[in-house]
Length: 149
Image (cartoon, rainbow, N blue to C red; front, side):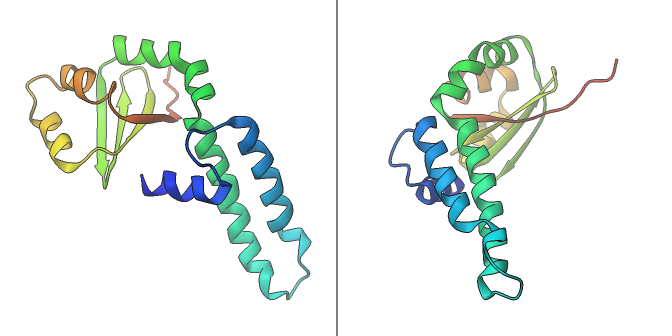
């Protein structure tokens, strides 16, 4: 959750992510902080490199969480959570990363330790997640593991 708020603040996003606004903000920030804008030896050059990486990472992160992106990917997400079981999961802070048997991996935000422990101790991991994780928490697709044929 902290990362979401940090990136939203960086791009000036108030509430819901609007891709048009995000793209405009991204372009302006890249223009301002592009490392090529600074000469060798300039004190701000190193800071610009760090800042530009943060801008790029934040942009891709927020795009993956935008309502338009989620809506576009909803059929694939629904297919995954409906037809695939959980093959692996990791919890760190308030982030739960679930890898499904179809190879898709999603990150769920705001998962507290008590919620995570209830999931781990549930009689049926998949049923618990379908009822208590998927419909209630923000998520984004994080990566896809290629399956070998």
